[in-house]
Image (tube, rainbow, N blue to C red; front, side, top):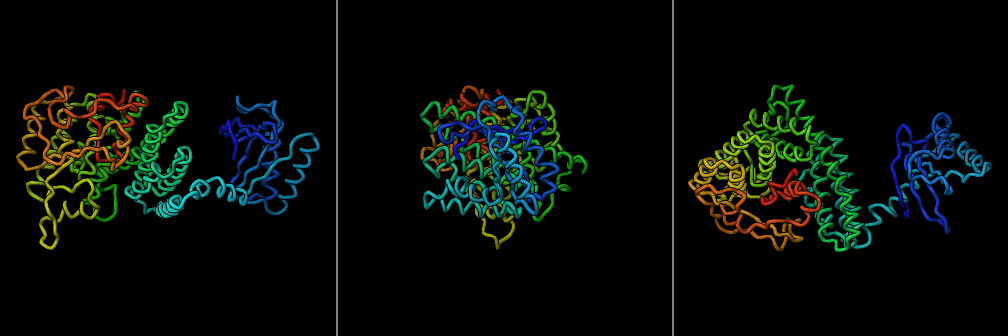
Amino acid sequence: MGFYDIHFTHGNAEFGKDFIAKRDEGGETLQYSFQSKAGDIKQRGWRDEIQGQMLESVISPRTHPNFDAELHHQTVLVLTGRLTGNAPQSVRDFADTLTAIGKRPMIKWDRQDLIAAFMNYGLDGVHRSTAQGLANYGQFYTLYGRAVSGLITEREIERHSHSWVEGLDDVDKRILIASIEAETIASKCVENDRHYEAFKAYLGLHRALLYALYAEADSSRAQKLTELHPGIFKSIHRLSDTYLNGVREMWTKRKYNLLSVIDGPGLIVTYPIHCAHILEISGLKYFLDEEKERKDTIGFLEKFFSKEPGAAHIVSDRYAVSLVAAVLALRHAGRIGAARQLLNDAAVWLCDRYEKGSGLAAFEATVEAEVATLLGYPFEFIDVRKHPSSFLATAICDLAAYVGDARLYEGIVNDINAAGIIPQYWQPCDSIGQFLLHGDDIIQYPTRINYSGEFMPFEEYQFAEHIKRETRSFRLAGKIGATSYLALSLFLRDRYFPTLWSSIGT
């Protein structure tokens, strides 16, 4: 709408101004202030509360260092409803009073004005320029409806978020759309206690920003995009904190028994998936925490997997990155024994699934295929074929090397080979494809990854063929931190950037 120098000033010292902003009109710059109210306003509400705030907004220049009292001031009352009863006449009388004392009359934006502004400047306005934009707009409202009803899934968010990286050529509009949609979806997910899905929405926004930042050649525009990153990470951290606090409180009350906390059908599958979510959010949160908070987070993580056997029961390759986040946090915190135990338990689980069952489903498997692969092997009427390749096997072996325990590493590599499991890996380069699920330059290792039978220090990058060829550095990691790549892996779920592991959290 042409406003700039915008600041949120709501609070105890707002002096009638929830927001302030500037706009150039008719050859001069106006200093705007906005007071926002929810719902319909009757005369009593206007008289007892709002009128005094609007008067204060006009006569008091105090509120924020960027409020320029030397400019002509325009105050705006923003309503999500309407003025009812005698309130419209009272507002007109107030506007006349302002004019009489030499002030600009107050402007009112009510529900109809906001609807028009949203249509012209909001999602409809930025989407409607192309047929694909309109299609994405419709998909968003379908997704939003599922978020409102509490039925949304992380996979649906993942699919829709593709439009956030390749939907529009205009980067500013693309990030605007991603920001509004991610926030809208996340807020509805939180209202319906679907905190993990809210977490996923913000991870999608984070991926969109990384994509735009990597592709931006103009240094000043790249700097503006970089400045958005801390705010997104702050939201991810806040959601992680909310999610874990809720889980931790209920889990403690139920005497460390997650099965008594979660509900719904199919607990034999949903239980280990909940465990995986807790592992990955705890792991990422540890690296986002301030130093003084990390001890508490890592203490919870260590206690959680020691009490919950499902933490090591990774359901499919899709959840391998959950294990990565947890083990990286444990190693960074110096909890080597705990990291060793978690990896050992996960390796035993994996090998048992291949020796006694149908293995585990591949990364790209549907939810139905995940369940059938995990549980269907004893039943003749369920057609399940063993999938020999395993991304989880690669993650466990790489993590065992990173933990630095020679006996653990050699034992896991030997057991995985003995079980006939073929470690699988997708290798990104430092290119735009690193942010895409199906990037053209992602290298897929089609045959067995050969691991050295003898332990080699992880930092030498010689213990396996894919590690030898791994990209040693990523441009954005040096710019906004390697922790961003851990967050990216939790969104894309098919990669984990091992050469950056030692830099995460620094």
